[in-house]
Length: 518
Image 1 (tube, rainbow, N blue to C red):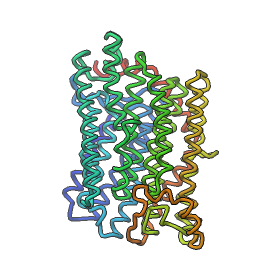
Image 2 (spheres, rainbow, N blue to C red):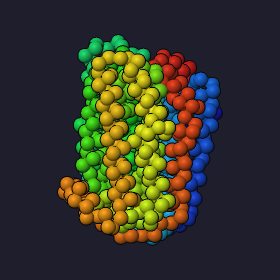
Image 3 (tube, rainbow, N blue to C red):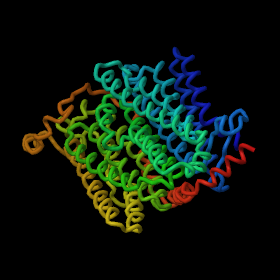
Image 4 (cartoon, rainbow, N blue to C red):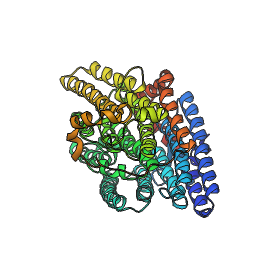
């Protein structure tokens, strides 16, 4: 089974190279992309079963180089679970983009560029998830950065180039800070291997630990879009093509969250900044959801809710108990799937109505009842209504906080409940205006929401386009996955609980990698 670990990173890179060579053959590129992501999904699922049942992670020292000189690829329950979920999401969005490209003659997603970049993006995500050292994690982020810059500027419109420049500058600042932190850690500890760092970190003075901790925390918080470092996201994501926006919203910020989970639990467990994380989590939840309420464009509403719900993950990380870490993992999986699904549903709305502005879209319940259902289910899920996975994840987080019982925990619980209610309000207001409102209701309704007229992109209007069946099928499949998170919440949450318990015991990782070294 160990031989399967490197394939998680190498297969997408090989697929990207083959797709680039087959640039003039659209069907060949599509086939390469689908086969590659399907294969990675199967491999990751096998590895998840193996590491969960065996209880021990799998580690591979690439090229048999000794630690800390070699690259260690590491797969435990957390990395295997996230790769399974990510590959499923990537495959669904790929099918959505194939349908869109075929219908639009690839105007939005030029196939010769899209498929190699998309597979390279997948390679960056998977590399980050299985990195056993900080430098290889940095490499994963940089692969992501290169591919995402190409994808976010597809179509070469003025808005996309402008927002792409902002995105790349912010990402480069984060990367420079991350690289500086890696250099400082190597200078202080003589290694960038995460197992050895966790073993040696306590040898450093407390002030030095705190400085190194803050450097990584800021770098990863930018990538995860944690307030106040989330200013770049709401303007960057909505301008990209629908499939690109969906995969960015679902996955890219979660790679930053993953890095925070790894470092907070396994590198700095004894040097916690939990009170700072609690304050940041509360601010991220509240500011994000208030931003969503003030928007009139669906993609911007979802972008602000994306920022807001990152706060729940930081909340769970700040509680720092096994139950809270497990709940954070479950909520991360839930959010990857649900947020991606909502952006795909909005992509369908945009094609059917010719707009994503809730001031302009109306009457879709009668005109497109299937789209209404595809939007409604993930919307109420994200809002946290029972019995959906959003409710399960939030309840688990609140329960873990209540067990700690400190005053700041109670404040965070109240903030989390308020955020959930306001999320539901923002999404259901959009539902009501876009699907239930008829032309005869427009005058009175628009008078009540006239304050949204000055919101960014409030008057946006695009061309109405046909919706290929494969786009609807891909979105339906993702909705089915969101429902599956609820139906199979018991087994999935059990895996997440085991992840939470294992992450707070970094000595197991140290022992494992010492065995690999020997």
